[in-house]
Each structure stands twice: as structure tokens, then as C-alpha cells.
Amino acid sequence: FPSHDTFDLVANIEATINGVVVEDFTDYTLQSQVRDPKDGLIATMTCTWIDPTRGIARITAPTSTVNWPLTNAARMNVRLITTNGKVISSDTVTFEIGKGPTQ
Image (cartoon, rainbow, N blue to C red; front, side, top):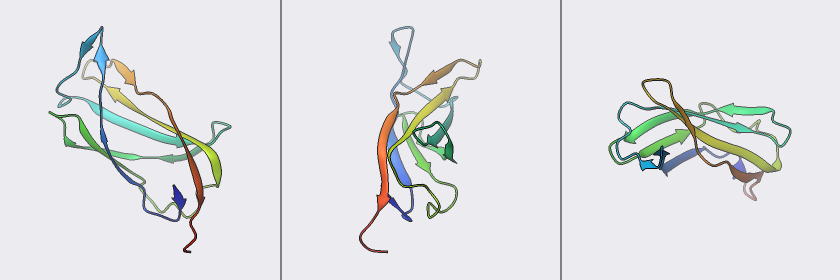
């Protein structure tokens, strides 16, 4: 991911609870953060449902990424919170934050 770019990710969210695939996320809240390799917080992301009945969500950085540190091991995941407080975390994704050639 090039530093300075707009972070805007559309994701297909999948989850299981007790072995049962969740098919409708209407009553679920989303959370996501980006962290550096030493677990320092880079950004708390803005998460919205595009279509919760199909598990389609948008994850964006709430501000510019211009000050994001350059790293080859930034990490993020998505946390789903049910209406009764159960928490389900996605797998962690590792990605690079680097300088793009056009600045």
C-alpha cells in the first residue's frame, strides 16, 4: 500500500459461530485497526456495511495516510461484535506500507 494514498477497501466478510456460517451481518458491528510490527497503533479504521445481508463492508482510513510509517509488516484484521457481545476476529492480514514512485 503506497503511503499518501487513500485507504479504501471493500471486503467480503466471512465468519462462523460454533461451526455455523454467518449469512447475515445486519446486527453486527465492525471494528478494525492497522498496527506496526511492534503492535503500535497506526490507525483505527472507519468500518461500514455496504450490504450486511451479503457480508460486504467498506474499511477506510478516517484521515490521510501521509503520516503512516513505512514498514513491510503492517497488520490489520476485522473484529465483528454481535448484539449479545460475542466477539469474532478475522485472520490477520500483513501488508507493506511503502513510498509510491509518484509523489
